[in-house]
Length: 207
Image 1 (cartoon, rainbow, N blue to C red):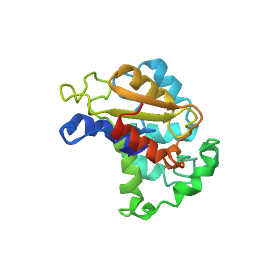
Image 2 (cartoon, rainbow, N blue to C red; image 1 turned 120 degrees about the vertical axis):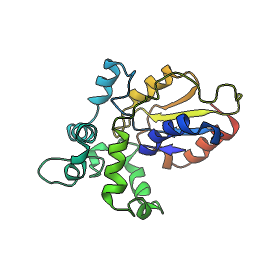
Image 3 (cartoon, one colour; image 1 turned 135 degrees about the vertical axis):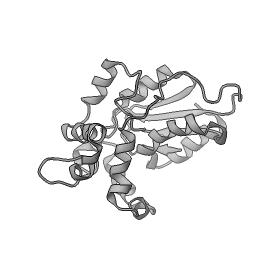
Image 4 (cartoon, one colour; image 1 turned 60 degrees about the vertical axis):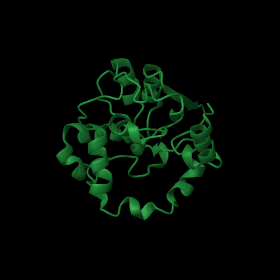
């Protein structure tokens, strides 16, 4: 189970270690705008949903990864609104969940290696040059049976990660079970009852 930047890494798990997986839940995953197979219209739609400072931070992570640490710590220009926790990036449903999300018990562990190793390097990996694309067809569980499922969840009102990429991926990969939440933002996994719903879909196969 992977959320946000961790959701993006689930595609790598599906590619490289499918034999170790009994099921996967991908929650509001970050997408790489440079994945091959992404049509220009989908790219444009997703790219311009982001705030200008977020587009800049993503562009730097991809094209100038050696500059990512400086870009995300400098104060001359607006840097990532996600990293800065800009209130404007929270959807209507995200706002009451933001305090709960910030109070997670493992928050300190997230940055225990330092901000660059923990956050900036995630951006470099996530938006870097992968050498392959999750959009390449092929079910990693083909021939295993119907018990292994891949569930993709995304909120329509997500301002952190545009929903357009998940929509397209779900159409391109018919073996992905897609759940689109019409009023949810990015933080829906911490909403009351949602963890149970997500786990139930994995264990019982509920759509």
